[in-house]
Amino acid sequence: MTSLRVREVAGDLLEQPVEALVNAWNRNFVPRRLLLTGGISGQLKKVTGPEPWRDLARMGVLQVGDAVVTSAGDMAGPTYLIHVVGLNAFWRASAGGVEACARSAVQRVRELGVASIAVPLIGAGHGGLSPATSRASILRGLETADGDVDGDLDVLICAPAAS
Image 1 (cartoon, rainbow, N blue to C red):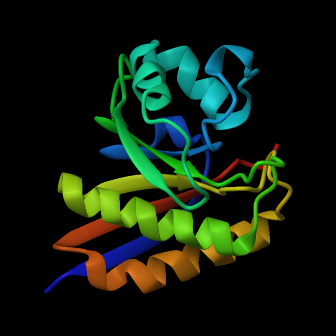
Image 2: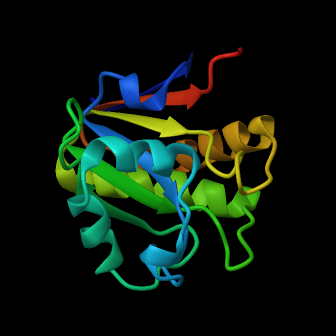
């Protein structure tokens, strides 16, 4: 029997004890050198080293809802980064796009054989969605992807800790 176990946590995405982290990314159509990366991507860039970002740039233009995998580079802990495209060309997120991101992330996890991932509130930062809309969209995407899971998968949905 297989199961998808979802738990919500408040805290730093980068400190979760998981095999893969989901990084909400853009479509890759702006050259990386021109981006002032912020949010989770900015935090990740500080701890991974350049290799995951070089690999991501080589993947070309991506579509909203796509998910691609790179190593976690020099980061201690997770083995993989799953970059999901949560923002459209106007740097905005939609509930449907976030739902597609969650489904695509589960597909990548299935291919990797990963048993645990941490997911941020996709689109709730630069994308303009409310945390509640992001959370609901992620849950819908996970729900529809549940049949794609081989074995058990632990999903941590991480919201920033209240300050």
